[in-house]
Image (cartoon, rainbow, N blue to C red; front, side, top):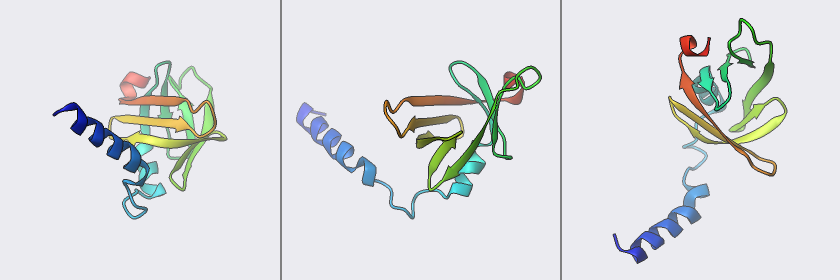
Length: 116
């Protein structure tokens, strides 16, 4: 691919990115919530995102840290912090805080055994 074609493709993709999905194409809050349930590893700690609306730091046998979580209008809330969902696949969850400095957080799905 020549450089001009690459740059044109990049500019079109960058410009249309926010408009790539229509509201009808976006998953519902309930669907997102189902996909989030389970065990995830951050660069520092494993977490369990539980269906009861609580995120627990793992291993649960020795950790008492927990926070509420929710998804409303496609926005992921960890405690009071609103985050836009950047990526949500069966193995990866990336989200970015809506407030500056717009920090990107990345989690990788792990097993219960690996979390505990």
